[in-house]
Image (cartoon, rainbow, N blue to C red):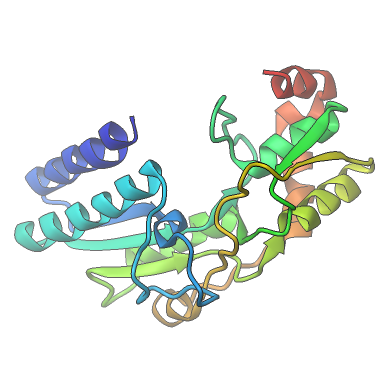
Length: 233
């Protein structure tokens, strides 16, 4: 599925853009392409180390983007988006985004299962900041064939994330730690210097404010019983 959507779908879209004369294509890539990196925050010049099929498909999509763009004479930019969140985010049955999953488990009164010790950290970026970066990438000059990180530039451990969600929701979280299963990449936080230089990008919504907006604006989260049903599936 990852290959069909992220590779096949991207190539089909790039060919359509070529055929109709699109001048610039912005790819929503993913920070998962970095994998485990000793150097943090991660910058765009680091070699990619994709560790899961999804990340491999995103690396391939980037390569197709730049190759087809170069051969077809249209501009291309890849934005490596970190852990984006916001209202309306889908919650698939597998590989669910961590923030909506934790919120629905906490609001529903269930247990939050954390793989590893909860010390693994991520860079959570609110959807409005991501949209701002996409708009800027569509219009900024002299960014053809560039890879640019889009994140908050702030590192948050999973344990801290759960505490912040519970505080914003005005409740307590029942956390269960599964130390036998890996929590994935140990650390991943964005170096935003290139985004600031090329896009004048400055994230404006920190995690606490983003969680408050999410709880206030996502209709699904206004119904704890519905959240509990979703968390159980």
